Length: 73
Image (cartoon, rainbow, N blue to C red; front, side, top):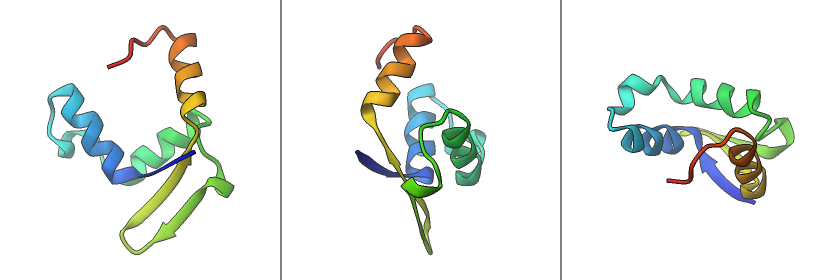
């Protein structure tokens, strides 16, 4: 299991896409996407003053990438 902050994930994805993190929406939006993809649930998150941290299972991410034919970066 890997713990990641929504804002950190937003910045990493923005860099991969060659965009500024401002164009990616805020950390809350990333949290909604994580939940909609069923990569985290209420039991796998921690609240802190600087944002929410999610517990992500790398195997679940890789499985989803295989099912949707997403190439690894």
